[in-house]
Amino acid sequence: MILPSCQMVLTDRCPPEFRDRAQTMLKRLKLGDGESVVGFRQEWYRMYREEGLSLEDLARKAPLIARAVRKQREQTVAESVASDGAPRSPRAETSGA
Image (tube, rainbow, N blue to C red; front, top):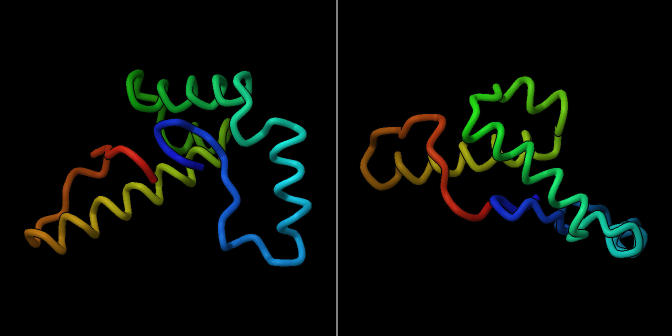
């Protein structure tokens, strides 16, 4: 899941024997970048960012988005520690994932 666009892409974590099938599903079912499904994902992400939806509630309703948020948080903290030694707030957001 790419944040903030909420598009889903195939990654290296997908086992090679499932890659073609996974890519076909993303494309045919429009799960990767279909306007409707991306719109729903963006709304859940917006509620998390702007309306105080907890990460736990986000994980219950939109687990892939919650996973992307957690990954983004980890990257932000790691980058912050690497650059100045002080972790940033866990709610800090950056573009991309």
